[in-house]
Amino acid sequence: MAKELPASAWQHVTWRQGRRGPQRSRFGVIHVWAAHGWRAQQHPPRVAEWLLVEWPLDALEPVKYGLAYFASQPPEVRRLVRLANARWRIEIV
Image 1: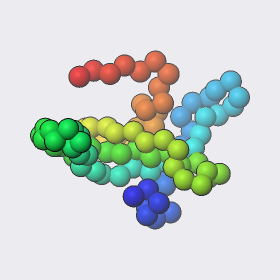
Image 2 (image 1 turned 30 degrees about the horizontal axis):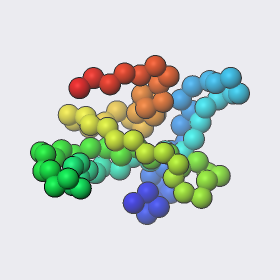
Image 3 (image 1 turned 180 degrees about the horizontal axis):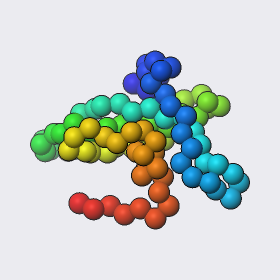
Image 4 (image 1 turned 45 degrees about the vertical axis):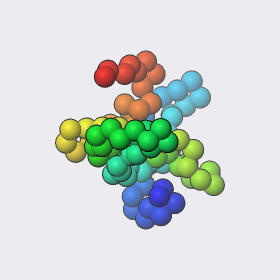
């Protein structure tokens, strides 16, 4: 899916300064319906999620993926990337 996104769907984002300079890459966001539990034939309620894809310009294919759920529209891509790459993040269920 990521390889089929148009060039306009990708954004260059710098999310923080690191020891070796700015941490930056190229990201795209795709609205998906994930099939959680399909191998075990479980059928939990499905909700729309957002797939965050990291694909650096010098990579042949995407290098990282992350799913996120938001009750409404997700935050802008820059904020979503900063949340995904936070150093001391926690998960709240």
